[in-house]
Image (cartoon, rainbow, N blue to C red):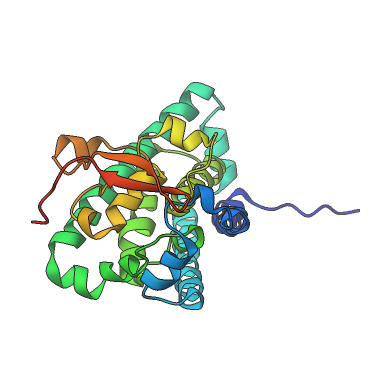
Length: 259
């Protein structure tokens, strides 16, 4: 009886897409827990400027583009067998590749993201699409203009893959992890015991600040660290307060001018 083998390249392309929708589905199921929401469901319906069906279509388009680029990248860089032979498994090597890829992705996305806010043409015609979600939710994490998706996520992912030197097999885990983190940052929930909130300063509340009017010129860092915001003065400190009607609210701890 013949077995069916799935290549690492195919898994590296498909896994982040599957993880995106599965992990988003978990948060959709939990979104009825008003006591853990950063915004109420009423606010979500009233403030957001785009329908959920449009968001789904936009995300699927971006994932299609990412899949095509991933396949091309894997084709150019060689097969998984070649990569595995050239690179013996080592936890130390794996950790180095993960950290390198995280820093590369963060650096690329910070500067591109910030530039899209400061360039009025790019913001109006491209990046403002993502900010139609004033109240973010999980499966809207990758809702971007196709050009932004290509520049920030697809090119950023390709650079982190190439510079870190990871194999296609390693990329399955890295990009699935990055996808989960991105979905978590947009989920709009502050759940007890969330490991991402314990480990990363760049979390759901941190990114929620950026989506509000007072924070659009701050907290550009994504998806892992806050180092560039701190180094370059775009970090907006906040406090997490309980709302009277239930749930939480991320509030800036001091006044900021929207330059």
